[in-house]
Length: 69
Image (cartoon, rainbow, N blue to C red):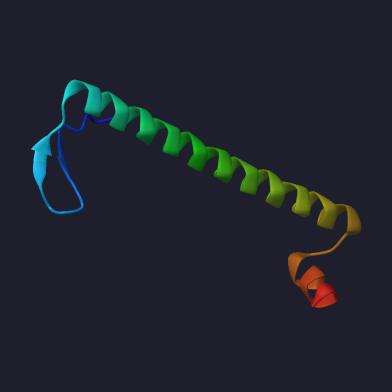
């Protein structure tokens, strides 16, 4: 993960981050990445479960969409 040393805030001011600010920024970024990955994993699991049900029923996604309309 690249280290960010400068930051442009919402008013357009460019400043160098202090050590504490940089640590907080990197911690926040890591948390956001973990949350995003958890969401991706949940979506993947949901799609896999849906596909498993359709396979057990012997339906394609198009057939299921037509039935559930």
